[in-house]
Length: 321
Image 1: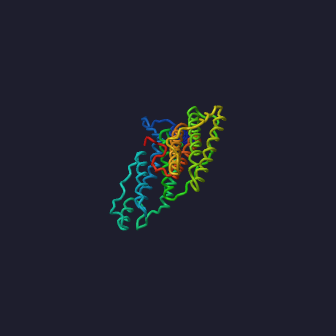
Image 2 (image 1 turned 135 degrees about the horizontal axis):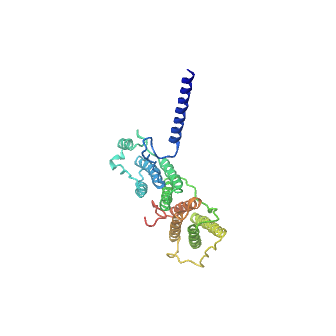
Image 3 (image 1 turned 90 degrees about the vertical axis):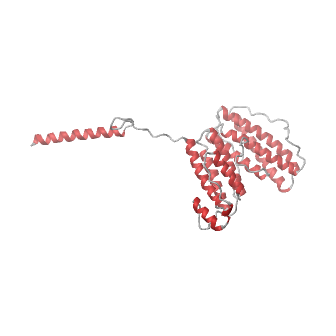
């Protein structure tokens, strides 16, 4: 009897040891199954694909809001749809003109997943949606490839312009610049290009301000000071990185004569649009804080251009689009 018990104990101990070994094998990083076949490894998600999906979902929801808006904003919706196309999102067509009555608008809203029962999206809710899109794009661009980061930064700037047109309030960027003291060669080049653009912009505002009065002159003075501060910040950070900032030119050739308030406003809008393009290129030149700062400056330039009468665009800073 004692021998039988001892044998059972040994058998139990052997089974326990075997289960422990199997459990250890199963919890290891071995890619094999119990049958000895290769276990498929999970496919890593590409950051660009994930970003496109998340931004695309936000754009799709916002498009549905425009389709169910209390006031038609066909031009704004077209801009958002163009952004969807650029990001590879399939955007639905806007409802037909027949959907202008409350009953058909409600039916269209039900089909698109938007609020039904005649509850239409207000301009304030659309502006909030555009602001949310700005925030999302500004976050996603930090983890994507340089080319997609540039596109997302421009998409955020376009959303900011639409939000502004809808009466939303988006914060404008100040003169702050990234605090990185050891930039890469590409980042340093982008800083130098931004400095040169800010120098030219400061000169241009000095010319156009003389042709303005009242509110526009105050705005020009404020923007002039902002660009001077940004110029000085770039100069300081380039110097801190151990490089020599490019010197400003004694004078800059203007694209046209500035002789009155109208031409002054046109020059201001042009200067800001050109600055937006420089900062869009800077976005894809760097990473992390550098990229975030360039994207913020791009968005600020796009909003200033709009305030000076520039036509809104889905892709501020991207002349190829």
